Length: 499
Image 1 (tube, rainbow, N blue to C red):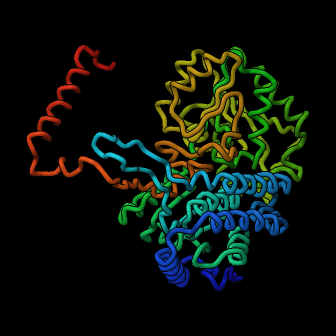
Image 2: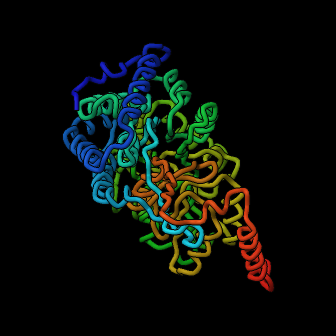
Image 3: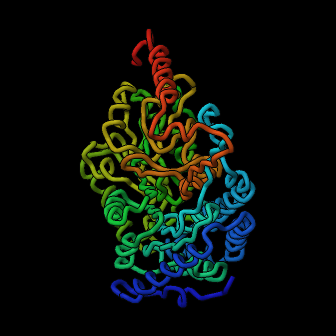
């Protein structure tokens, strides 16, 4: 693997600089040539790539911590270790351990009467050159983490970090350049013009993680070249607390995960549905949990600043609009601080907000938690199902049958019962959205398959009836076909039409 600097790969440029687009074209062409020359990396090489990726993160731990703190103004170094390094390393190790099984041919049944001793199987084939547009909220966990699935599947990748986290983008570009050959993995660092151009290339697959609005633009751009896409778009992820669900343990789970990156997470709890009779209990529990678990959280080192000034202004505006509309706002981080310089904002509950307010129309992605009281669960399900499909749904309660019923009546990308967020971190569990929250899956074998061409292969044996199936057809062939159709008709006689 040749050491290269990020500058020598694609350059670091300002918006509008055509040099980045030219360099991206050249990198894409180089990876295309390399894939054509060597289209099927073997198990040993793929495993080596996964091991190198894990070692790369460990080696650059301090730089990653510093970059996260620079881009977010304040970011917990421990959570950087947990969420941006350990989460990726564990997935890489799991994939390396399972890769031989994933790459193996998957046998399929063959009718011996017609095809004799022929064989059929599915063989995962690398798609080729994949583009990946990473988000700002998890620059390494998703930005670098998706490389696990793509490299395990034998592909070459060009990664575009988000321009909202420029320090992280530079670190990503540098460490990829130090670890991989540029014709296998490289980074494209740039601004808005590069981001607009990126999905227009004829990729063999493209992944985009970000907002639904930009996801629509990306999908339109890829459609020109019929590029298959994986879109992870987020959404307003609800938590439903049933009559038995308003417990200290469950409320603690919700408030705990809301503190992760101060709510800047695509599968954080966006809003909560609580039985009206237990609304005051929920608020009291949330207050007590913050006082006990994280006093003055927004003033400490384990909080996360809002990523940009525009995002800070948006969160402050959403909260002000709720107050101006007469909503009760409960500051559960009672000794917290609002600090525009470091973009710190305490966690607040907004009680029973008007459905037309911005916090109920937009994905919040910040330290605001609307709490909606309800009288009947059917009404809650109607509200969720009438909106866009969420990336995740969380159900809390002690009645297992009721939990299952609620889960089955809501469509979402993922789900959890009596938990939130953690389904997204399991190496074995496919992760992705549905409808407006995205399409496709990554993580584990689901990610390996997502970025593989699952090619069906047929191997003819020594004896079969394939010649008899081709014209001109003999009387024996016609009789056989008639017998098969008659048997099928008889099998269907007397059966009831499916509901």
